[in-house]
Amino acid sequence: MTDRYDAIVVGAGHNGLVCAALLGKAGRKVLVLEANSQVGGAAVTRSFADGYSVSACAHLLYQLQPEVRKDLGLQFALAADDIGTIALSADGKHVRYSGENVHGVSDADSKSYRDFHKRMSRFAALLRTYLNKAPPRLGTKDRKDLFTLAQLGLDVRRLGRKEMREFLRLIGMNIYDEVTERFDSKLLKGALSFDAVLGTHLGPRSPNTILTYLYRLAGSGGRLAAPAGGMGSVSEALAQVAREKGVTIRTAMPVKRIVVENGRVTGVESEGGETFSSHTIISNADPKSTLLCLVGAKHVETGFTRRVNNIRMQGNAAKLHLALDGLPVVNGLEKKDFASRLLIAPDENYVERSFNPAKYGETSPQPVLEITVPSFRDSSLAPTGKHVMSAIVQYAPYKLKDGWDDKKRDAFMKTAVSKIAQYMPDIEGRISASEMLTPADIEREFHISGGHWHHGELTLDQFLFVRPVGGAAQYAMPLDGLYLCGAGTHPGGGVSGAAGRNAARVILSREKSA
Image 1 (cartoon, rainbow, N blue to C red):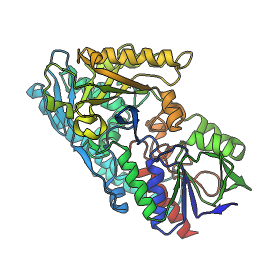
Image 2: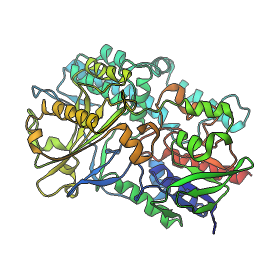
Image 3: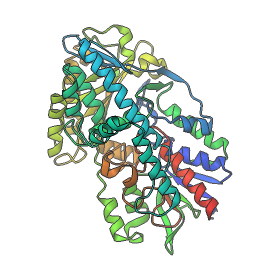
Image 4: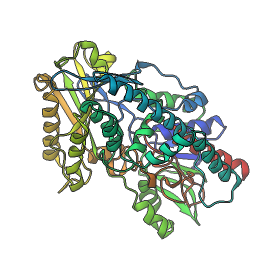
């Protein structure tokens, strides 16, 4: 028997849940099919050792859009808000920053940082305006697109002549040149460089790393938060809202194919052989998985297929989880400092050297790390008196020479722990269980091609008008009734919900005008 729906969403990642909830709110009969046993995609909380739970992939909340929360009335508790950052120094002379304030640097660097943060925040605010709307098409005569393009030009001009020139100069630049020109503190330069390349296949000297820094800042002004219960609590809250709007969510239901008949989608078929009918299919999966696997290249024009196949989306970040019998000792840190985000990125050149091996399919012998201890803020994640450490470790290329296996994963985990031990000398003796997810593991567990959590690099040629590819930036694919709503679409990755919200608005607008 085939069930019919107004819309079917493939994948219950946070964007898929946002899209489904908004369609349900508009009165549509919506079905969400999720391959895994729990909702959330890469924004989930799960156990990795007895009594220890962790946000498995995404582990900090900094981009969830206020528009999403408002439209859905989304509610969830925070274990911590406005989390500060500490750039660790082996001698205990750490640099701390949050918002426009920085400590542990010279007065000159402190002033330069305030000026830098103010300028970058202004540019990020401009960018943020366009995160929450479908990007205009280029070369079109459509009035709405032309108006949006004109509005973009006016918004850039409103920066003023000097700032407009600076924005246009910086947007394609690398972060390395900017921080070396502005600051003397090696730790500050290293930390800002790392912030610009976090989760990417880019180094500080790579073009577009100012753009990636601005994108990160555009989410919520760089304000970092941690949901109570881990990132999975955000996804569960979204799922609850969707169900309240009448959406049906089925987990452990992997989709085998999107059914296409006469140039339009007509439904989906599950791996178990169940079929569900709808003339509107929305995929929260990445563009390559959707077009090349679920749809099949034979149903799409050759040139478009080639552009999709050429999307750069090879992950370069691993995720390390450690179960600890207590907090480690760090020279120069007090106990309360474990509520902060800790960075190991000694200077901008170190970060660049860390990236270099990844260009040749090798892991970094001297990695950079973003470390959190989520159980310090949220005791529900570990047994009493014990702790969870969660770290993003770069660089770990998806296309490792000769491929990833258990031996290579264990070797890179040992490298990461050894680097941490240079700052936390008792860490190895405190570890009771450990887990590392390489990009290959992230691909397998979260069904993301290349294990890249942005579903594609955030660079100017894969951003705004041309994300995921030219001619497909407004969520509709070149098959009637097929849409994308995941991180591979505008504006990109991060737990923001913007892509899901934008896709739902486009779909409802098209229905209204049809």
